[in-house]
Length: 232
Image (cartoon, rainbow, N blue to C red; front, top):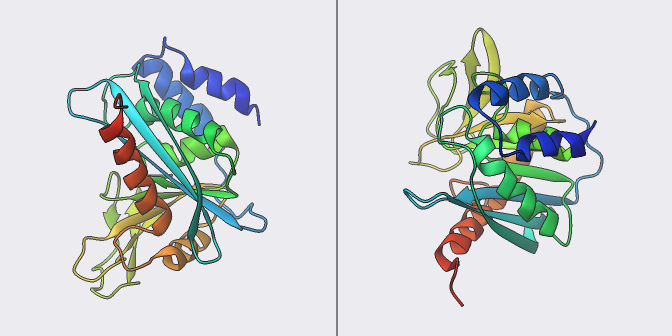
């Protein structure tokens, strides 16, 4: 994988929608949808936070020990975005800041939970898949709402209940009831992982909240970075 060259393509300030779409098609061809994972001992979650009408993006990444899901280290970054807000292309706004935060992590993870979608995307390359290809590590998409596809059936009301998310006749993800009386989350393959393994890891990381622990802590870290940006 030419990850460093790929990163330069994404970080360029001259990207427009046409060139961004071409990059999505290129990176989609590199997504691996089966398990290519070794021993998983460190798992990180990542998320971004943005103020309304602001061009700044704030990213938070938290790395946890999979044994007990305890926080090991965290990193954050704030960067101006160079890409407009366009549904289906949000990764181009957020990934530069996420890459900057990832580089600052003192301990790198074996696998990354990404707040967003993986292959359940109109062009098969949501931010979880996009980031996985660029970093060349296994990633899982953890979305809060459906971007592409429809549920295959009625989702049960008990924590752990799932139903397939279908698009164009294929399963592109799972709706998971992660907590009773809460809206489901959407689990999808990001990169180098199967859907069943992704689901197993998410279930293992649930600690009584709607979001799995890695993305829950990353969400808090990104918001903290936004709220404290520019303050002494």
